[in-house]
Length: 447
Image (cartoon, rainbow, N blue to C red):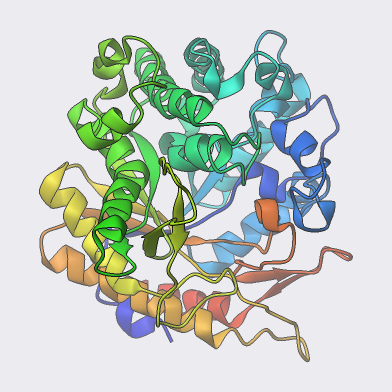
């Protein structure tokens, strides 16, 4: 179980669970505007089964039950996200009062249960009206995002324990604009280069706005993936180096050092916004903490089928270790190494592991879900955190992904990450063995 490893963390270490609005809320009524994921899911073969988030886990109506699960599990905090189109249906301008009221209920419900509300402003559900204006490809998104941040700050800021601006800017920019796997589904290097910078500019602008409104404890949540060459060839070594720049060094260097990696800048030179360097002081606005989302490592070959390779022309090499339902290698050492690298090479700021977890083909059998592999996954990754802390990393918290099985973006409902099983037909919640392991371990910590 988890008790023995949880006992080794400091008394003030923060344990929580995480979700995202589009993945669990449903409730696309009461004035909520459309998002890019609504149209992306409705288009072609973008999403497994053309499934969407219209109902998801019905958290919009069942939030008291879900908060009770967090409290009963013994977790300190809940990392949730606001849905931008629920608050501002057109992305800017008119405010949706029913959307404001929903998050009032949700946040007050956390506080009543002794759960810290840790909010993310943007977890991928851009209002469609802003996509019509170019979305993350348009520099004006920095001001749109700032106005949205101000609304959140003014209405909820005094009740939020922690605020992240953007979740996983690599996914927002490169996965969605160069690889086309997530909404809005572009496969265009110019679009990606602009989104790569504008996400960071919007982040910095929002930090300025939040601080001016008196909101503190601000951070950025980035996803990390150690990049290894699939073989010893110079081409694969170069592919891994560039992938590391795209995935890890671009966002981390921008936010902590005020500069992007030179090798990636050279590769993107023809596509980056003009005079982007002038924005780097805003991009690197001082933060209070950094968020690390970690799931696996990447091993890469250069795509030899492409006569003139560019960024993104890489082929996954696979690896010898056990895989999750997503096909991702279970590689706890990568979490330890990532935490050490950030602390050694980039920043001495406090760090939170803001997402870590695994998908598996879980089923309820006789009222129980025996996800032993997930229990082992958490135990091994928590042990990796302890190793990093012993080496001097100022790690302050760990959030399990995810509280609930949910809408897994382009995978639809085919992949289950939750520590609580959700029957999507009946909406019945069934705590898995991993939830019970967390519950027992966190209870033991409290004596």
